[in-house]
Length: 592
Image (cartoon, rainbow, N blue to C red; front, side, top):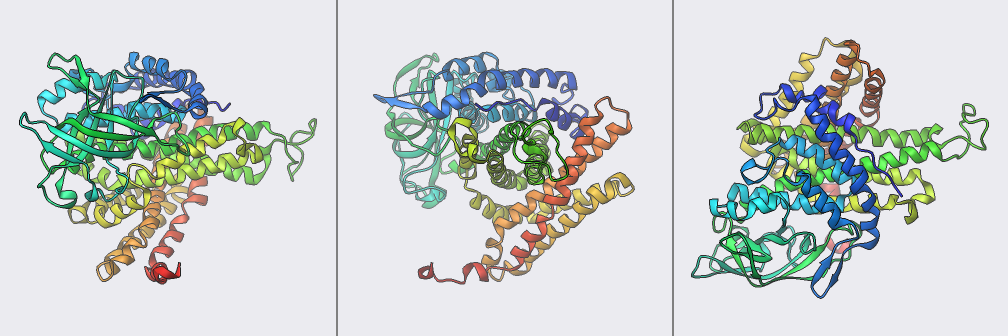
């Protein structure tokens, strides 16, 4: 069975050496000194490794079962959920007035990566609840917040988000779920939603569904969509639970992965619902949850890559196969370990350099969310909005690819369920699809985010890189290995943006056909920037005479690999973008 070791050392490095968290002027960050974050991460890491990871295979093999409308989660899930609740892990960054601990989103993301890496399907129950709670926190009335948030923060009640319908996925304007107004101010919700993660289960006393529906007589399409709170059990004025609402699970979807999470078809039969936010402004309220969810899904892609990589490394060190072409490394054994072979090293270095660079990217994005929400920084809000589709799309695409590489290290054993490697690949696959498929993320990036606010956010990104390069141009230790490659990759990104400006207005397909490549080009540049920042921090630590020289030297070697072997992909993506739409659109539909 695969194992999982929480990457606490690397998390600490990024939090304090790279992001300088405790020195930031973001409200709440002064308390995040190294001792405090170490205590939190070590305890979370212990739960991840000792409680959640052993249940990962259990959840995969048993799955969830529905009996007479009741969904049973896998063996051990409920006890583990109780333990996570009791430890206060479900509400690290929620406000204290509702039972949270008011810690920064940054620290919540670091903990979330470990939980997700050890057991993604399990962690989704609390993750979705957090997203639903955030939407109520931002858009709910005082009465709604008091009624739902304390129990949701504690995960005594869990939450969901209900968007998709059988005929309606990304194009939510086509939805048919209706919300009929009632005299008491409530609504009667009728319709069917599919692919609802954690839609029904046995680990909480109540489930608070956030449901998109249309009020009759409203505007057509997406402009007529509203968001509603629809509890599984009605909540009385004194906070106690009342009668069962008209919402039920029709079936559990049979899926490729995340078997431990109950992905449900949900039926709403004149269920009582309450408007969240304004009428016909449901998408604005839902996107509070969706943007958080997209960052969280990017984290899932990274986390599965980390878990798969850890096991691939151990296997490569242990499995004896063939001899090192430069000379035996295990002369007393029948063969050398796999890790001596250059192609295995290439695979492991691809994985390691992505995971560590992606982790820095994810945490940097989380810091910007704190900078925006806690510090009121509109520039940070604009930048993280620009980068959200990159975090989601790039980290999940690459994360999935890395789980495949890890599986490949095992050879035939990677394809056999007994070894557990296929679960990482199967679980990672959904992250490329849900919360907005990655093709949609690319379209959002190129079609909306680049031009947002007159393009000032992407220009701010370029200025950030230019400033970093200029501030460090005299640092000879960084120049050839990190600064020069980053500068070249940044030029490729700017050239791609210029191509869109010059050609996209005349024919939008020229931009849209290159959008997926642009998302990946952007992702590589972001990781290049992160590796340059990490290299600067590593050199500083070595110059200061750190007692952990091996860690920092390894970090530099891994970063050099990324800059030399992975970052040059930006040239390929630019070449594809500049080929335009013609090669993509040349065939008529009936020629396929």
